[in-house]
Amino acid sequence: MHSSGSMRAQIGTLIIATSIIQLANGFFNTYISLRVASENFGATMSGLVLSSFFAGFTLGAMRCAQIIERIGHIRAYAAFAGLVVAATAAMPLKTGPLPWLVLRGIIGFGSAGVFVTTESWLNAKAQPSERGHVFSIYMVGTFVALAVGQLLIGRAELEGAGPFNAIVALFAVALVMVSATRAEPPRTPAIEKLRYSQLARAAPVAVVGCVVNGLVTSAFYALVPAWMQDNGVDRAHIALFMLVAVVGGLAFQVPVGRLSDRFDRRIVLVVLGVGFASMSVVLVLLPRSSPMILPTAAVVGGFMSTLYPVCVANAHDRMPADRVVAVSGGLILVSGLGSVLGPLIGTSLMARFDINGVFYFMAAAAVLLALVAASGSLIMAAPHRLRRPFEILAPQAVPLAHDVPGASGDQLLPESMH
View 1 (tube, rainbow, N blue to C red):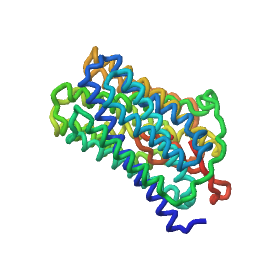
View 2: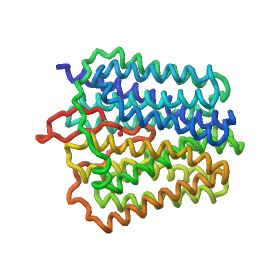
View 3: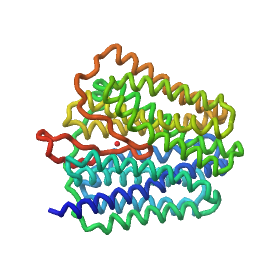
View 4: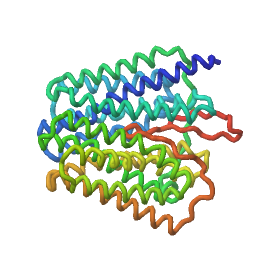
């Protein structure tokens, strides 16, 4: 058994390494949006290249647990980070829609693997009494790193291999940090299965909410930077806009979490859906000046980033505590499917109706969620007690592992599966 100091060092290393990876991811996702727009792949191919990351991420979320079980946490982390490094390094060598579609898919798969590994490892190593605290530090680190990643966009050269090399270097640093830890990684248990029909019947509002979250989040991150660039907005302003949206997401987590633990979560989802839809429309109608756009972007980011964690908490309220891993895994897949469709639908709308079409599409999806949540709250009573409180969950790294409350409160169950 390791001392608590060595355990803390191990947890700290994991959190710092994952924050470095999130910094790379935050930069990479915005950079790819700008780069694909400047390459003129055409609307359909651009949509496919932007979607392929989410397709790979979703596939990774489904398959990674088995890989971790077979080869262990440290080796799995090295393998997944190595995949990302190799695929990122290959992108500037072969520029074109088809190679990039495949490589971005591989990067998505590897990224999901890194997050699954990290979160199941944190989950198993943190003491039950400290686990909520550890995960909240992990999530705040993720948000801050995503935000800092946006700032790098202002300094990046759009053409050439420089940005890809920077991303490779960041992933390699994280890989070295984790590979060099002395710790014995946790053992992973087998994962129980959950049929999607069962999840959809038990928590229909959460399932619809996760699809909508995937649609709007992926469309926002993949398309808004590209549109701003096409309209002559300089990269420093694009970086600032995306930064403000991420910081707004962080600022909303605690107040929305408190509300969702106090009131029927479906009513909270109605408010979030209507709030997000109306702010998306406001973004279309506002004059395009920083003092008007930036505060609105912060509120849009806030509503958008709280949809998923409220849906996850709603689903956990309606399922037995021992199914928590399977529920989380099922919701990732549902959200991932939405994420794949978001850029595909968005790019075709943008080709026809400019960015306004994308914002109206996002608003319509959020209104649909609000209607489903409102009708759900009318038809079905809220659960009497909350099985699991709201947890901060970050965008672009759907957290894949959570604590399972043991029967005695001090039992520790490591999990692999956002």
